[in-house]
Length: 162
Image (cartoon, rainbow, N blue to C red; front, side, top):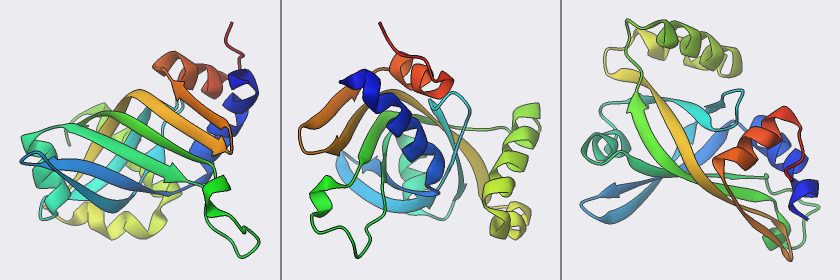
């Protein structure tokens, strides 16, 4: 049941630090690996991206995007199809460098990715917020669910949907 999966969704989103970012380049899908930090509501994710990267150029032209966050593969996992994963669909917007959100986001990002500190000094790097509008969670065989933003918030709060 979905209610049983929400704590697992929250744990997956909070435990990982990298995601596959899907963008569109003139209607053609493009996927890259990015570091992320999940925000408290599990609906927003901070990305620190370079303007020189193709995915950033794609997002500036079309802010629609997807994030795939997956449980890591280990030697103990025989069937990789049983790994938990979630695909979040939404949009990306730049966080203004002079905004209070930027300061808070930078602190949150560096707490999770301290090695990125020097990149915040580079002029071509900016902070972006991915905001989910829906998600698809697969927890293993016969455990697949479409999630709404309300489901993500319930997972974040530890509440069970009715």
